Length: 183
Image 1: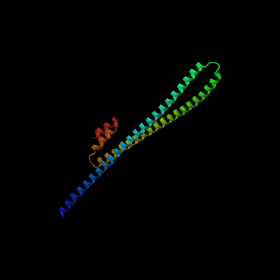
Image 2: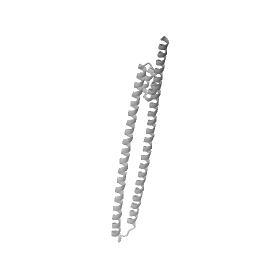
Image 3: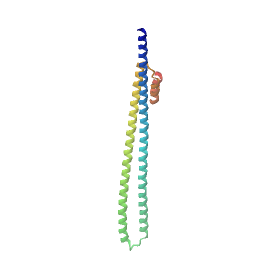
Image 4: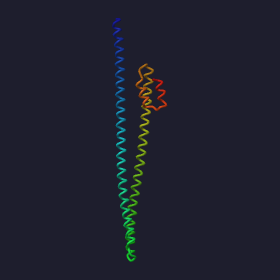
């Protein structure tokens, strides 16, 4: 009977150790998945940022082309004004009025394009601000979860040095001194 109790005791210790090992492996797997997903989201954000940047540069290039066209039209108008004799002034004034109207419509379209570019830039800046706030909140949540895990391990007399080193890497200089004292 005594041997059976010893085997039962050894079996219970072995099963407890096995369960704890499996739970640690599961936690390590979950941490790996979460950090991998954070890397993917960071890559996605940079790709979106570069796409928007390329779109904005293309729009600016189009606006610059339109500005060059209007500048060349204005130079032609100035040349015509200087060359025209007084007899054809009325006809040329009418032509100039038509060109001025065309230039005015082109300038209005340019101003509309500029307003669209400004709204795109402000929307992009808002998205970047929201993304950085979201990233900071996720980081703070992870810090608090690691701190809770460390406290639980401390209360159960388990080794918690790895969690402290992770917290030390995540926190700023003010909190590192406290973590060094704990280590």
